[in-house]
Image 1 (cartoon, one colour):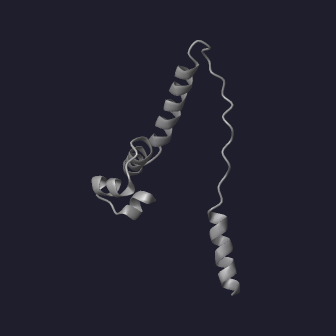
Image 2 (cartoon, one colour):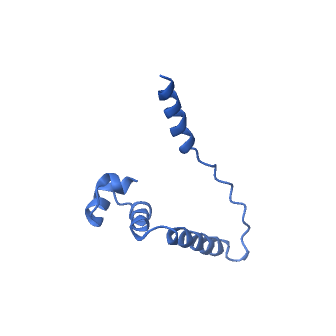
Image 3 (cartoon, rainbow, N blue to C red):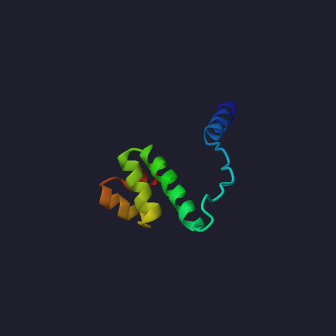
Length: 86
């Protein structure tokens, strides 16, 4: 019983995540606030995707940007559905 409790505690420690900070950036161009924020977000997204493997980045884009289901991603990328979910 004690080992089970230790195992659960260890898994919970691994799964902890840090809260996201509020985005407090100020738009640089008052005439085009949407464009400057959009460009900044595009740059951040590109940098984030660049830090992933090609396979991981493809799954993120297909799921979040193109709204593919995990089954569709699995078929398109030739991977198991569970892998696409991870």
